Amino acid sequence: MPFEVSVADVDEAPHTAETPADMARRLSAAKARVVAAATAAADGGDDTVVIAGDTVVSLGGAVLGKPRDSTEATEMLVSLRSRPHTVYSGVALLDTGNGRLASDIAETQVFMRDYSADEIAAYVASGDPFDKAGGYAIQFEEFHPVARIGGCYLTVIGLPLCHITRNLRRWGIELGHDVPAACQAYTGRICPVYEAILADG
Image 1 (cartoon, rainbow, N blue to C red):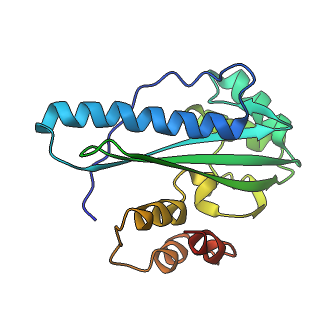
Image 2 (cartoon, one colour):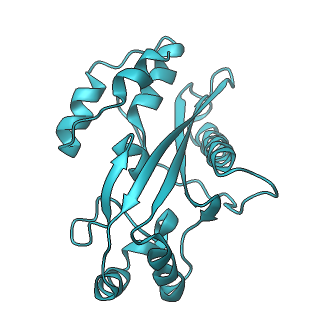
């Protein structure tokens, strides 16, 4: 499907007593609304589907946002080292024609490896952590911080394609490609969860 990429400027601060999953779902919907409003103003209101996402890293129930500086990035990576945590990616689909909104949440357990202090310092110096929830990117090959995951790899990257696909199907929109096959070919990983995700449609 043809698409354009837009950045949504929303306040990503957590709300009081909000779970990490609820936060990811709320922020993805907020981003969809911001982009839909901007799209309507720019193109005169032509119908389109906005797909938005937001990723939240949770360690022991506490949310790890995007680090503000090198010190905070280092502290996050130290706190995650050799421990499991949970990544939630919320996705929201907004039909600008009729205003309907669908939202979904993907959850993946992530187990970090025992990386060294020197590896952390080199990764922080690269600048990559600063726009990443939790201060890391699973796909950053030079650092490769993750030992293994339990769930969807693209959830950790921030765009769980099978969750998006099943919501498009609920609206009667079929993609012209085999999404799980394309995802696995792109990532080079065998996905153990796509059948369960797509069956829940």
